[in-house]
Length: 313
Image (cartoon, rainbow, N blue to C red; front, top):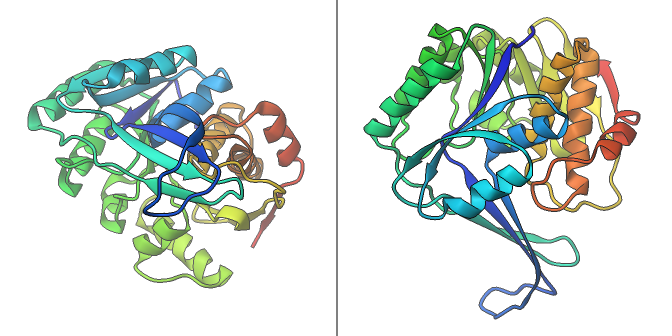
């Protein structure tokens, strides 16, 4: 499927602040040796990766206005095209504390509550932006004010306008997938378990789980499994992607977002399904080699892509 336009919809953006310290002990004072600031959130991360590969897209962002200047200045530096709906309050800031041995402590703040007025404004903007064959990436945990019913209504609005949905949110349920029927859904391992309502311990159990999501209405199911790679189904074939072991991991935050972006880029390149899964796995793995939530480097993606093994199971 080819897309005439790509929009990423971020209802819950985040500024990711990464602090590097010599050591970390709860209850103690620590000096931050260096710090990174990234304009992020799952949907925004997808936009950043697409832009780094010169894939045109617009990041549609609902943002608290109180601390937004630095956030949007950062996106401007990366040439990310944005359209913004401002609300009262602040963009949430997530803080990651990383020690030299790679141990990470993460503080995740809450976002502002989305009002009905903002939802109405959002639908007006979507009606202006969406054309037939527009891909809309709906990603990130939903903020207060966006219930399951409202999320389904937003997705129905997108589809009625001719849009196609990529869904990547831990707020999703099996019922939401049945109602939304996305082009692709991209859970991680924990989200996959939550969607099917059970722990998954074996590859056979994971195969059944992704099949269940396909039967629920997802055209493509792309489940990222961390160091174990990725499992994919289109409802007919199931592929497993094995990824190389990394000698050093800088950050795993945003790896799933990079994988989804890689799958979208592969679609733009007209790759077949097997090669698209390989590309997605390479993007997700390569993103672990760079600090913060920055897009993976092209050279890292290319090198890892040659080491990803994809096979039907």
